[in-house]
Length: 239
Image (cartoon, rainbow, N blue to C red; front, side, top):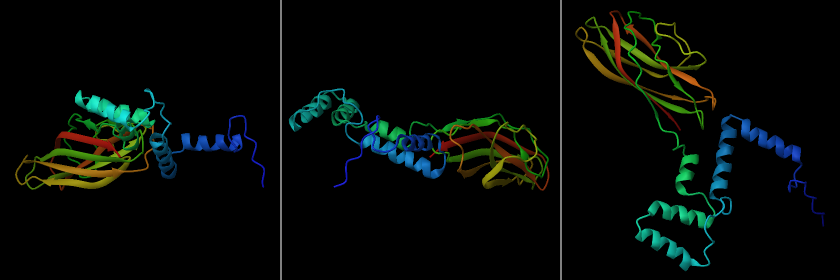
């Protein structure tokens, strides 16, 4: 029979440098594979009994557990009831699991930037909206943009497309920069200055967690005229 390995001073049978290397990879890695592994480890820690120390005495039998349920239920404390049961079992409460595993702690970023100046350029330029967002969990975001387009010339229109990047955000009128994502939204004004509300969507992946990004619109007049963009709403949701 093979001898049992002698534990290291930290209590592990694996060489400490190996453990240190693994911890470093898990704590600093940003690749999709490492992020997926982080999620798996978090799930194991949150759902494994005795990981979260109980704040109440361990129930002696199922009758005591039923007592907790009945008492808190009769008081209408359903949220606390769930937390008490999770504590008795030594696992994280459901709301904490949702928060960490499903990203529910991150509210959608709702932005209503100032209207950019009207443009006569038929070549896409930056609107200079200055919307900033820092990915916190996955580096994947869904961007939804709604805006009103109106062209001062009948029969002409306008277009815009989600753009993003890092570093200094572009100013209004700057040449096309960053990365364009999703499909462009477009509208045509049948009469001068007739306005239509349109929307554009984009899924952006591969952003670096913890690195601030800017989000903007690349906009242009279609054919000619002067394009006005107003009532801009940009919603950024990490998933």
